[in-house]
Length: 135
Image (cartoon, rainbow, N blue to C red; front, side, top):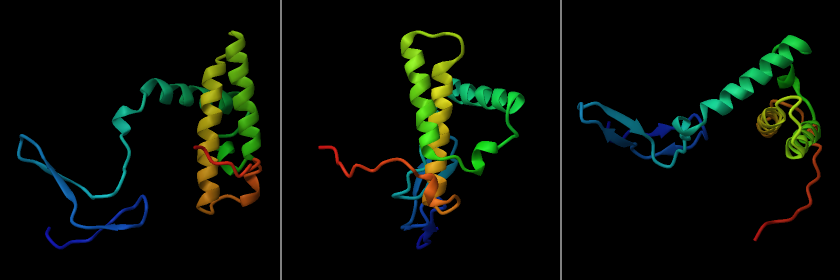
């Protein structure tokens, strides 16, 4: 395995010989240097289940499956996200407002990424850019 070049599917970049993790069993697994694959083992299954249940509710009640992936303006997600957060902060319990805020955040992040990689039109990113940086 020496001298191989590894290409990351995540970033398309090449890295040198990967790091190897050796287990007590003798098994070895690679991890290319400089590639952040994320830590999926640290993602809350409760959050994932919440997003899945809200997705199912929307599909069963109003929309066809994957309707949201066709492209919805980012401002629509942000508006709904902030409205549900506000209702949660008011203490309203008529529906899972925090879960719906999470669903809208997940959809906003997904749509923004699809715009960035060219899978959705740029005009869906209709949020203002104030040009400010944090210090």
